[in-house]
Amino acid sequence: MDHIGAETLKRMDTARFYNDEIFRRAKPFMHGDILEIGCGIGSFTKKLTKRGDVWAIDIEKYYISKTKKALGKSAHVGFGDIEAGKYFFDSKKKFDSIICLNVLEHIKNDDTTLKNISNLLKKGGSVFLLTPAHQLFFGSLDQGLGHERRYTVKKLGDQFTKAGLTVQHTYYFNAFGGIGWFVNSRIFRRKIMPSNQLRIFTMIGRIPLFFEKFIRPPFGLSVIVVASK
Image 1: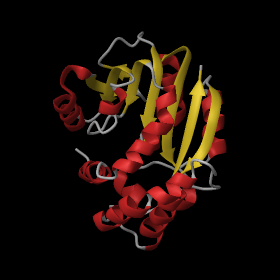
Image 2: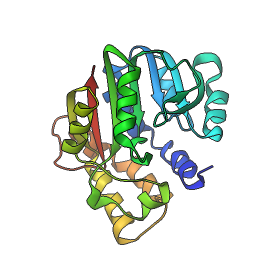
Image 3: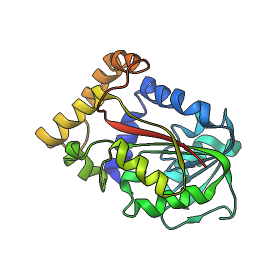
Image 4: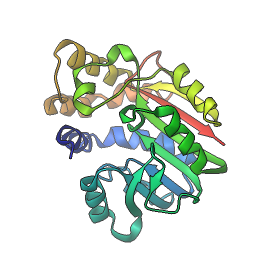
């Protein structure tokens, strides 16, 4: 088990407003049979069950166990390796909606992964994907979490198109968090985001995120892509 990753997920789970804002942006595109790629500890899985019938996958047994325990029979949870195209369900199954949050950056062959996502999506279905932004921000926090890379809106948009998906929206998200990441990862070289800083983010971070509803920043902690097939 990735102990740094597990602790980071645990700490981020306390930033409820942040998770709620991501879900608010994803919600319009989630319906019907929903596939969650990389369920982690199930922070978003429970929210998704209110939007449709959820299949949640992860490659870590620990995360699968945690999510199964938390969700019971309200979601289908099991092993899934999106890069290898191996899942606990029939690989011929197609989904109305696919959500993938902070997973693509961990995968060596991201082009193959996006093609596999496309293959799992029904015609007319939607994908909502969030992944870290800006290679300039890549540092010790990324290394500690096992990240392969970070992205730009153009690079990721081009990769989606190459995978046979039509990009509907692509933009940067959470500029305030991006500044904090850069300082901790590139300047202080920390391996994990300090819990006291996450508490500060929880208190004041909702203010800049509120304004991002109206003004899209030129940079951010993450890139969000919404695409269809």
